[in-house]
Length: 107
Image (cartoon, rainbow, N blue to C red):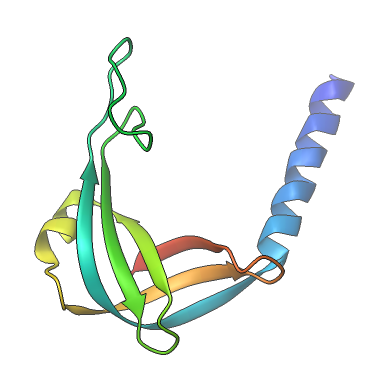
């Protein structure tokens, strides 16, 4: 029981540190392209190293203000609606120390 409580506290602290070390950003972006990664089934040969057990719908955007390219995971319906050169709003988090983009979403 004590190990479970300790483990939960460590996970909570790591989440707090990760989210506290991020800065929320929002801006306009232009759709550069779209990508689809099929799901893999257990025992199947993996053809794409990004493949997981679920489908992935990815939209690649370039931020207007700083030119940064971000890959945004979306749902299928949103992915199908978007076309190259569309202008969209993107919400994302950037690591304060590493500059890594987290939790990007089109909205």
